Image (cartoon, rainbow over all chains, first blue to last red):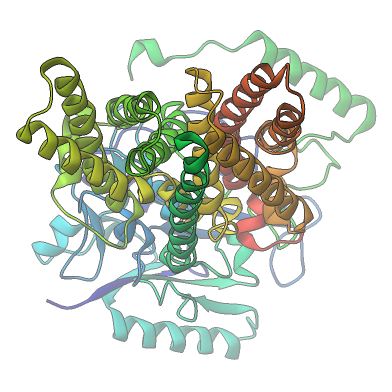
Length: 262
Length: 342
């Protein structure tokens, strides 16, 4: 089985939300409310239990070369998705073993095992996985595990009309991403860059993004860390605490003994 | 579309829209997000504003059961240790028995709280499919299982012994249960600090090295407090333990207050900061003062200890509530996870 990945290229995205719709249709996810966000034209806001693909509307002030004029601001769109981390916080944290690594390299929540403890929710450095309050279990992008099993492309990549969402073997796609960024630079889009946090403890992802400018404007964290890196410090503190509790209690009761026996 | 889902415009929203429109007509400019009448600034996603200030991280999905569980578990774990040590050193039998009862009661309440917080409570047993050393939740579940079995067995054996007298099987059950509850009680009293310390929430993981110690001492303080409230107000050992835990909590509070980091703001500001501070005063300085006063004053000694005990128990509970609320506030802080200066 090939190890696969998504490459989402925001320079090609037209914000049509076909990926969101295709994802919802294929995976039969419920609606995420018909509410106005009050922020920009993005009324969905973020990926969540009922939104596994989410098109971000990164609105910029009018800027020459970026598009827009005095009346209309320029837009960049970027379809967000679960990053399927190499070292996944949710997977490490899951106490039931419901979250597993698939043969394609993706991170998959088995819905028949999850019991809704919610620990993955606080362990995801990208804020992707979320508990569905009606259902009780945690949900996120499955990397279309079922489709990949059947040699099909994930629904979002299949539906994307501009090939902004590319899907393929991970190393091929990485090379493609680098070539694309280089090409964009040559064409004067100096601020195009690849977001793939390989230097942090997350150790790279199976969903990387080509964005323009600082990735933070796309709600992509500059230094995502897998929470297991805090374990050592925390368990040492726990051991010290246990030793203090045992030693202190022993000392207190031993010190109290002679007086009582008198 | 489900008919019940169709929403009528709210009076309040319509009123606000009317105000915004009037303001736009008069001034050509409106100070509100997402509304852009002619001439108003665009909503902008940038390095300064993040993605419209929409938080990156998800808030914890845990409800009221979890802070209460942290409190109950901490008190129960420490009580098991106190009970076992008191027994080994030949302390007052009543103290041993009461400490065991707190541990046993906590052993039954804790899983009930945890299970009721699950999204699928009927699937709680899935926690027992695997043991994962890298998941504090998994380690905690197995610790709880060992602790509960031991504590309940010890309390049950104690009950049998009181009713039917000494016998070998009862003594074996009692000793085995007590040993198990001591061994599992030690990590059980403070692992909840590891549980929230090893997460993606900045206010929590910034304190990963402090939280288990803090929660463990808070658990000891509440255990001592509960025992004193059950009448053990003459035990010098409990007085020493309560004083020690309160002094430690003072130091912990000072450490927290003296550290400067934007990630720690939810621990100092807003509702969560207020609860943590009140909890800190009730856990640290106030019991220290009351306990020292009770040592000095002969006549009011036991009454002062009762107040110290109540203060410590309330402080311990408030501390856990405050820390969990701080996690919510920290997850909502969009600047922190994106490393945007405040």
